[in-house]
Image (tube, rainbow, N blue to C red; front, side, top):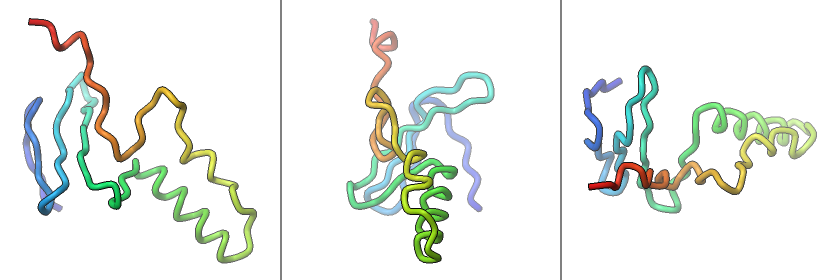
Length: 93
């Protein structure tokens, strides 16, 4: 595992086309913005694991769609592979 230190508005580049930017740091929470090509799936780990479990249960004859609802997001929330919307309150000045 590579461990890097970054500050707000600094980025990490993976390969030629994946950029991870530190958007905000509040207490012990870090907000990341991820820019990746559309063909590269980007998910939170718990969603990724749920998708894998669903695919596995589908191969074993489980009920399709059991975990599908976990991967769906409310309309006002960005997709996992989209950068988060800019906080307009930060754009003053």
